[in-house]
Amino acid sequence: MRKKLLGLLLVGVLAMALMATGAHAAKYTIAFTIPSFDVSDLYERMYVMTEQRLKELGVDYELILQAIPATTDYEMQLRQVGAMIEREVDFLILSPGDPKIAAKPLRLLREAGIPAIMTTFLDIHEDERDRPVRYVGFDQVDGAEMSASSILYHLSLKYRQVKGKVVLIYGSPGWLTDTRGFTVKNILEQFPKIEIVDEHYAYIDRVKAYEYTLDLVRTHPDIDVIYAISSSMGLGAAAAVAELGYSDQIAVYGVGGTGEEYEEITKGRMYGSMGRIIDEKGIAIADTIYAVLVKGEEVPLVWAGPWYMLDRVSYELGVAKELIEEAVGRSRAIMGR
Image (tube, rainbow, N blue to C red):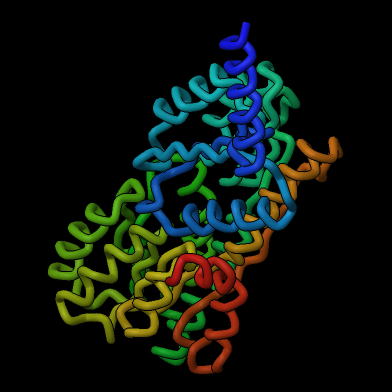
């Protein structure tokens, strides 16, 4: 009997010790199924700001991070979503590269009773069964139109008229290329003195964009603009152009506004990139999780963040620093870059 009482006493002491040190299972398990941070630092900043905001809100949580090597690896994303459903997570953040592909995992999550956020696009699925609780992202067509405006302005400054030779680097066939790529192409084609020299699919791959651009510039050194529809491909193209010594002649554009792009623009190796107010996206994700899980509230179906153009003109006007601070200032303070 004495041993039994001692055993119960030890269990009670251990339990109180665990409570005192805060060692307990988190109330909410939240999963991120997103592209690798190597694809774009947008995903890392989004993750960091989500976590920071959850802490500020006092949410008792555990974050599970599952990364995929590329936005186009749909099968891996689907497997990861399945694993999180089996684990019975409380919330899931998903970043697929195409609205059509997203329908299947979203429906599986809804059937499992797991609320989800879609962070890649704002295209609302027609069937309500395929919708997340919220779309959190940026209107890609709006961003592409701003990119096209910057390209047109650059060419008009260079030639005193709207003309020039342009190369377009796409991701993979599908939604992202349609919105970011073909939108720019359709606008440029309205100007008869602009020639689209080539269109190339580099599948959101930095190395493929780099290798393609090396061959391209060697055979077409008179190109004026290279527009790539992602940060990674823009950086790859810019590295190739710089290696061949053409950074002053060829304006390289990316889309994303990552920290590395900012550095390349500052160095004169890139001309511009469509930037997003990335930190606000992470905050919006956390605020949605808090509203849905903790407060049991409904949220608006769409959260759309703003775009801005960061290019050499914004540096010359003296507004670049302010734009960068607004976009990534808070995450940079945490990450140190």
